[in-house]
Length: 68
Image (cartoon, rainbow, N blue to C red; front, side):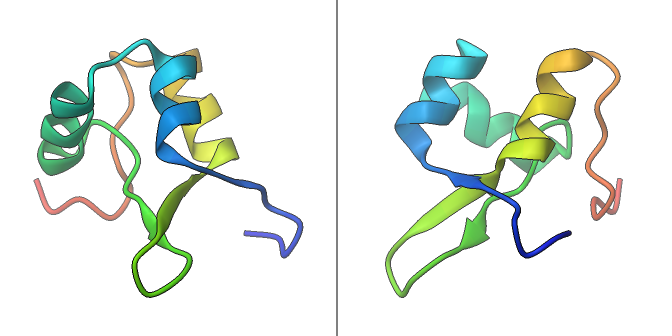
């Protein structure tokens, strides 16, 4: 990913996807939603491009790093 990649936080991800927090984390565990990335000791976010890819095709999205 480029150094210019924007990272978005949880509230923005939930608003853009329409998912509940628990559904989003369940989908991350299943490998059907992008994984979060650490941005500080206690903070995480998601690459905006990964969220855009999921929004474009939620049923067909598979996390490239998922083992399933």
